[in-house]
Image 1 (cartoon, rainbow, N blue to C red):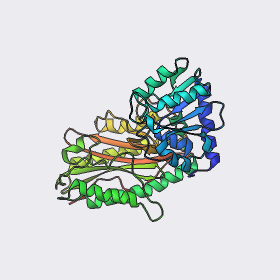
Image 2 (cartoon, rainbow, N blue to C red):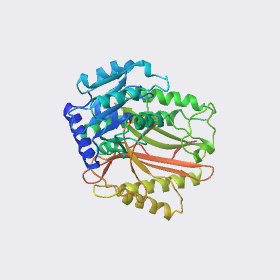
Image 3 (tube, rainbow, N blue to C red):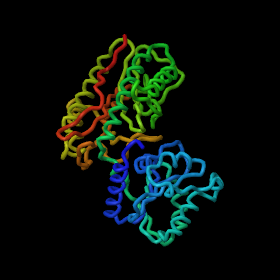
Image 4 (cartoon, rainbow, N blue to C red):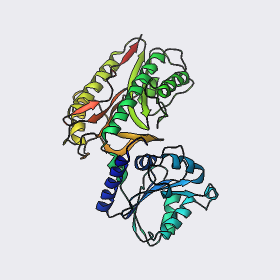
Length: 389
């Protein structure tokens, strides 16, 4: 186990407390990161049905997995082996048969079919077909959205989790330096990403890396005015900027970072834009402390943009921690105006400024945690514009 058994017990107890507050008797959690958080199970099996089932009065959760993946579950699950429920291969891609047919049988056999059942209605991999199976198969149950219950329990990290994120940040720094080194005129974007990915997996001598929840994001040239673009076979061009957004990963914990590199002669408008970006980030970060809200941070950030008459509609931060494709965000806090979420020690988020100006853009970010009196960045990697003449 990555964490002590006592930590998993504490996580489960927090989930049960939240279930009680929301009037949920039985929770079915399909979010891959939540499954890892509650059981320790980590495998690339999330493309098909799997979940954790928590009854309000049970001492341990049930882990529901495919037969082909049962070996990994038995190796990694932190709870009793008898609480791993394995469904047969006959349910795989044999519609209308579905693994949830067996899950419904389990729920009925345990006389849980008349309970208030919490579901992660907007989580990845919980399909409309899954919901329809539960709706039709459990007509006497009350199905309700749990409103990201487990995600919010994950919101405040333990010290052990913070240590993993700090290790991930070491990998991020090494990979970002590799990115800046290999992005040069004439180099294919895909070749550069190959080197970046190599660095991300090699990690450091002490901490080997893992696959990231999001592919290496590499908008370049006019693409810097867009978001979430990935590498092509095109070559980098002198005079154009490239945005790099990556996350080092350690034990599934992510530490994202975004930086901008410019090939060729410095352009004053881009230097000015990254200056304003960093000023806004720093002002926002200055408001990070326990008791302040996400809105407090956002107001400070946008006050700087207003000073420079820069328009930005997208959020400027979100919670991070455990991540699986397709996202490293935790789907809880947003650093945006109007978000009333109160900051607490060991809340962690990615403070990111995506700045777009029609046909060009710049970007910078920091992964950080809330401390007892302020905040701490996971990385000291320079957020200036990297100019390679």
